Image (cartoon, rainbow, N blue to C red; front, top):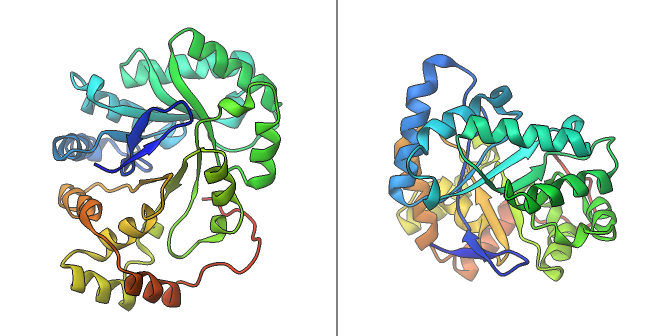
Length: 277
């Protein structure tokens, strides 16, 4: 498994599994649990969730799926901005731990910027680390100005990742945010790396997939982790797609592949606002 190095030197998988939209419908629960377990069996070790997903439902699904296998995994979860005060983040983390059925979260993120002062959230994160409740903390949906502001605060340099929207169709982070993260040895975590499926019917992806004998999704994922310091967390509810996605780890995109993808999905040519969904 390709890995990415966190600022403290710990290595984490470059390809994981997202759980957005899980835990929203009781009728899908068993299938979702089965998909997560299949992913773990197939070699996925990093799984991303949030208290927002299904209002805790995704964490509950994940908790049931990982029962008895927690020590093999790197779990990422996120706190709502309105719960990110010092007391609020402590309480929110405890609720997430209970839903996940675990004693610690490996990476705990502020889900997006909010009105609570960042130094207050950092203090909460630091005390959660001190108490063994979380192992690392980071942020999500922070543009380059906000990540610079965060990094300049007391304790802000401990931020271990920034999770943002990044895929072939939305490449704005390549202009400034991704280089900033690389220069500061802070991994960038790409959510919705398949563009929620919208990019997968593009004929160029199909052509390159055929050359490599894989799915268009595998090509999109191989592209998303082509650079050092990027973690990709696609979500799927279908076990067969887990196996197809994992093929991305064995794909070496050629210079011709990359140039063809640049023609089909042009990189940004200047600063752009950070997209989020």
